[in-house]
Image (tube, helix red, strand yellow):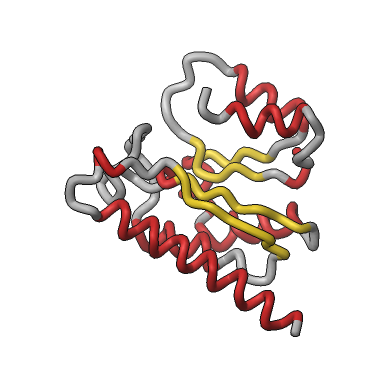
Amino acid sequence: THGTPFRRAIEEELIDPKKTVQIGIRGTSYDSEDRDFAASVGVRIITIEEFFLRGVSDVMSEARDIIGEAECYISYDIDFVDPAYAPGTGTPEVGGVNSFQALEVVRRLRGLNMVGADVVEVSPPFDASGGTAFLAVSILFELLCVIAELEVKKL
């Protein structure tokens, strides 16, 4: 699937699975292979149900604890956001977070040793209003602010 690069990176020991967190995983599960693999190598998956039950602050505190002081790269998938707020994605899945929660997740990354980030899965052909692109740019701006704040502290 389109998520295979991360699995391959784990298999090739390019990513430490015990320092990997996936937040907001949801949707139908026609088989458990992906989740079974993640569990077998130590990837922490926080489902959307757990995310909503625990809240942004608690979930992000756990993610920060898992990552610790290690260098990290954040890949922010726009389909984490409910398609009511971000319809312009190739893999929309109802039941996601709203725009505020999407930004709050990023703001709770402050202090991590983030060396890079991206926002993925924005699909302009499906983004008739441009709202998904605007949210993605806002998320990316917040990610850059977190990185810049860390870099300023290093000076």
